[in-house]
Length: 496
Image (cartoon, rainbow, N blue to C red; front, side):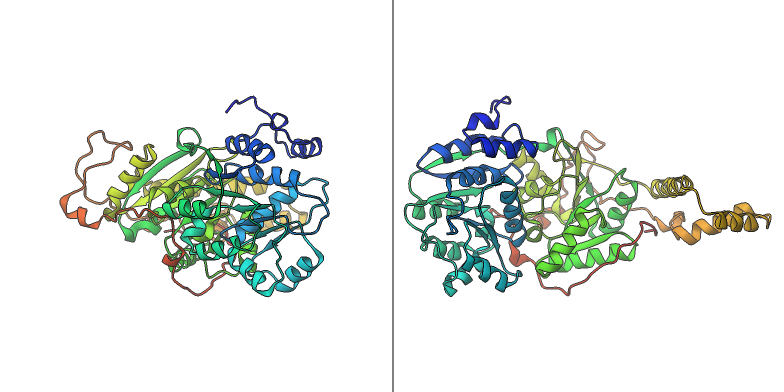
């Protein structure tokens, strides 16, 4: 794509361009540069293969906003998304792109009050952004009428396939006019998606955007070799020794996410858990808290994390390794965004050595081996953090009453003992070397190149533990029910 290409070159109208300028958008992303002209000027359907975070919503949203009739109050465009969070996010983005145009956009998903949806659908809307299940509910109630639909968008079609929505999508497709334009966006193109396209789409143009290799410039990818029992201690050390830690931590199951979040909360860390058992209201509260920085660690499953878009994440942690390279790319793509750098860290147990090598081969990206920080490094980091907080607090002038009290306490003649007691009272433990026993690395053959840069040969006894990556993406059925937990915000102290 020509880096000098602007939105003006794509044929968008003046009022839309004005809105984009106010948002600070000047140059289209590759998927936008290819898709927008095809939608504005072409007659064919479109299949676009592009990763999450490439600007897909604007790619289909801007031309649709241009082409539908404002104020008609009949559903002229339907966007289907796999999760409630993604549907809400797409709706918000479309609202920000429409500018002053008289277009009503309605999110339709489970967990949202049905009465509100029924009221707005009765009054009339122009664009519906829905999850397949709730769209089917309204079609059965005859409260969602799709007779006037001009555009049907399947966003993240591969994920909807993984989540078992293929039959719902086929049902919805039978309710829209045959002369509508269908737009299918997917990160991957499994055979079931191709089959769906051939069955329900006419002639189509193809748009393919190569996955960004963020690792080359904005994401540092590393892995640690360790035993399963040492993962929690390893994560705790990284939290306290990394310069910044605002992270998304991935677990394989709902039970695992809840268990990890509970243990981190018990260590006085600001943590929340996000998985399929979390209600929509809880999900919105958790994400709002995380986006504001009121919690700094979000433990999530792959399905629950779909649609999360936060530009400031410093880390993505694969506490449990993903099932395949595609899931890995989706996970780590959430850091190193908006011109910032990030770090992707994977915990690799003896049964997963071949998996990390397979991911490197598939992504054509090196993932460097690193050595976990020693216990003394954690203690030093905590000492520095304590001193920084004390000195920062001292920059604010305390009321005279506290000065008087301080002078009375210091008059005891034991200033060092008094200060030490106050530090312990405020920060708790965490400076005892015995609290940080050595984390043993699994026995392996000698590295050919040593240091961080090698992946060493597995011993024969480890080969049977390898889990071959599956061809599909993450599947929500791998999550198992667990009780819901909420975690209070706490300061980062305590030892492990």
